[in-house]
Length: 518
Image (cartoon, rainbow, N blue to C red; front, side, top):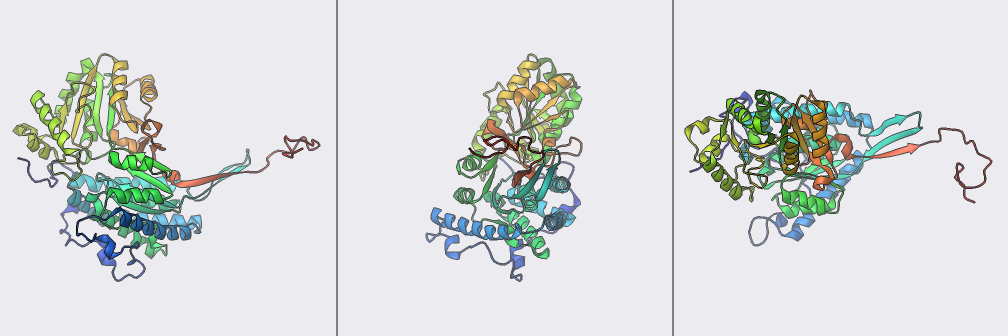
């Protein structure tokens, strides 16, 4: 029988910050009752928050009306923010970033996410939030998003960045803090307002993030409505209504959320959560590959959209790689255990609130759910050798596990990775630069990391990628985003061209250099 779904600290990395007293259940919104400028919710009416028949949720007309009022309020704030001087906006973003990155705030947000979602490693969540915020703030220092952002004296052009307006963003259960925190910074930097639509399992955590930002906005004299969220209860129709009314939609998370973003008719970026597939050509020692893959597969119990979900290597390297993964704390499943994992995945992935959903749960929880032997209950992750490309175990995103495939030769391994991998990111382990280029050409991922864990695709000090809370696979997955969602993507740019050369044919009377008609 499966034990308690509460995440366990059976791995190293849990921080002392998470030993703070438990919350009394109140949210940050409760603490703002005495602040008139923050107390006004986004058009929430009590008669619409709960249907007349008493059932949870709200009718579609009510959801649409509430979404409209929330977006209207955000648009008013966006109009005000659009008048701000770029230097003042920079100061505002720094202030909000400092508030979010405060050590106690990070600890509180991480604890809230772990308690509410029941997913991920509590200690890793604090690390993930702190790392993401540090990277985002570093990226913002070098990413002009307001006013004049580029000059080309030789061409006589100037590029000016302006706001998009209202950004509507879904908050997935796997990123309940990083997505709203980083997108708040990126949206504000471009002088936009941002409205979040949280997953049903992330409402309270998203509320805490939003109100933390709103406090910082109030202290800076900025419009607090610039960052908000849809009133509870969370629902897919509510998210759809937000996407349809915003000026720009960010659809991250489940297939249903991504599909809603792609069909809403609003300019959008879609970001799936399929995990990363790596290619290993056998030239890198198995021990080195295993170390990197294990980092990606276990990070936050696998609840990371760029976590390593599978690795495809040449056939002779399969055995050594599996052995090396065992040395890294992995447990290799036998045939009967793989069958039980297939059954668990088939029953848990259809409902993100289902009690049997294994995503983001600890390896000990998985071992108990699969009735694995005692040795497996001490493992840091599971290792499975799939039966083929159509096997449900071909990739294992969202859980602390990794699939290992073997193919005859590098070209065959790369072809399989292209078939089973997600287009938003990939990894390659090789000592040959030309092979890294071949993987880039064959897989065409939004981002490719070489000899690194998959999670490095979201940005790391060592690889030069800008911090990106979300990754998109471009046209291959129907997204207008290919690569990482960076601050510049949330700004609207206009290039202004002035005459840079003397008109050498001023005597001409027709169309041409003079641009005059006949």
